[in-house]
Image (cartoon, rainbow, N blue to C red):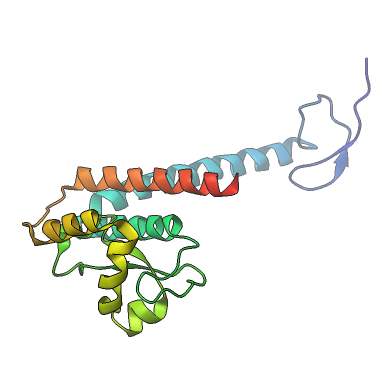
Length: 187
């Protein structure tokens, strides 16, 4: 019979010679302690899952729209990484901002339109309120005149009301696109 090498106890840290190769603790007291800690970890995991479910049930339509906006803005920053500011043309340091050509409040129907949102420097987006005069000159060059004209038409159309399942679907869609683009950037 092969003699097993001494191990350190997973609970108390004392060195012991195990009877079995899978033995993790030195004795009964440590085994009971390890079992209790494993149960506590399982309970904590279960609570985290339950808490997430409860939080989702409490979310409003506005909460889901805000979640989608965060994911969509991240998508825009990843998509436009390395591109200059759409308004002033300077290179965007760091993450930059996802700048809307047509404002979210007055044109909610193009809020999540990829042609309406592009990376912008902090100076243009925050301090110059989007620098729309320059944005309107540079946007047709970036996306093409035909797509720009379609964007203008869409912005004037009636409101787009997304239902919660559609919002969740878009969140997953953009998360997938972000993962895909980040993988391509690494490779």
